[in-house]
Structure formats: structure tokens, C-alpha cells
Length: 123
Image (cartoon, rainbow, N blue to C red; front, side):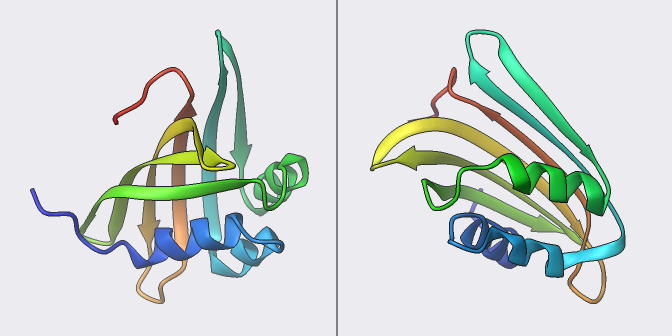
């Protein structure tokens, strides 16, 4: 399999890694729905769900400009982008993540599913 460009998710994580992650709010469709499954490891996890308001809540609890997302594999097919990647903190591995976005014809994110765990590394 060849890794394909995933421009929407690449921009999403670029914004999330910046000093202004709220820019992702400009990337979502009116009917946006998300679920972020966030594991801290050792069985500790949280789920952030909802529409725009859920995304605002998720953004409010995040550390800004601390983690860097690296997309290692990407697939784009039929209006969907899927990635496997890792986050680093000060250059060191922190967690693996996968993300799936459904993108509408205008390029806005309609659906977003993200799962993250420090317990599994694909290195």
C-alpha cells in the first residue's frame, strides 16, 4: 500500500499543534459530529463527543503548542481520509493515534473519529 496525501487531516493536525488550534472550527461542516477517544494509558481514558460545542469543549481542555502530530500512513478514498500517526512531546514518543475524517464536497469535515493511546507504538 502506498501512503496517500491526506490534506484535510494534515491541516487539522497542523492547526491542532499551533498556538491557535481553534482554527479547526473553521474546517467543520454545519452537520459536524465527532468522537475523540483519548487514553492517557494504564486504563485511564476519556471520550469527547458531540457537534461544534463538543469540539469547543475538547479544544478548551487541550495543552496548546506542546504535542506534535506526525502522520505516518495515510489513505484517501471516496470522501474519507484515514491516518495512522504518533504524537511527540519534546521529540519523544507520547502516543499513537488514528483518525478518520469524512469530508464533504466543499472540503469541510462532517465526521471525525480519533483514537489515541500511549500503550501501543507502531515504530
